Length: 303
Picture 1 (tube, rainbow, N blue to C red):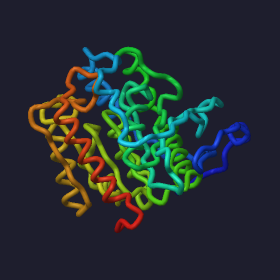
Picture 2: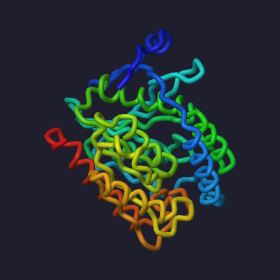
Picture 3: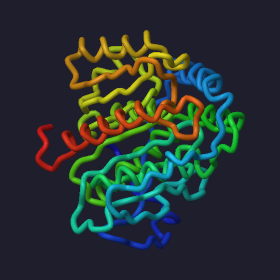
Picture 4: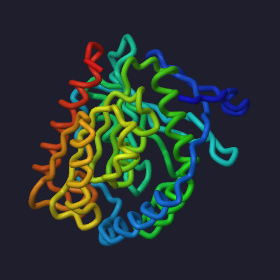
């Protein structure tokens, strides 16, 4: 892992501490891949079709309360074009020592209130959660804006990777998390897999909700984190054939994985603001997610 020193502007920014946390830093870059960008653009169009009739208005399901009290705060952790980028930090209110952390990556809408509510809910299960902002302060108000923001992120892989590296440095070094996982939905699901590629020996678990995946052995070979993939049989953007190819590649490479394809539901079945939301499936996926993180992020978990 390559981490550079934070910029003077970011380092000088005052950050209020709560529990035992805080600080910020910026990190290096990684190589651009034209084929990956092309595939990413295709995924943007697929997501645009899937979300064409969705809104960002949260349903009551987005307001589920955490299982235990949490404290949360918006804070800077990196920079983009000389501007601070803010993430959303949430942790159990009764935390007295560092806990395992989860880097949470938003779906194609951006770091909105729905993702922040999910961060609080996961923190309520006993984790430090840091929800990153890969759109650098922008949150989509409609599908058209989301398409533009996601396209920009896809076409700037070095900036995205730098952002994720900064988040990893924050939770592992500043917050002191003994183990670190990642989770994401839609756009963020693909980025959760990307996080496992960026940190092949450091990341301890990765959860992918209906995100873009690959069957390329060369891309997946470095991944050592256990993988939980949660997909939909009726997803027209992330097709079952691609999920099966991903699963087969993980099997060939003898990776630690679990792939669940839910019948009868479509893309974004866990998004309470979307037209495909399915409460029963979403709850089952959430239970699997929490169990998966409890297993692999426990302090005494076997690597």
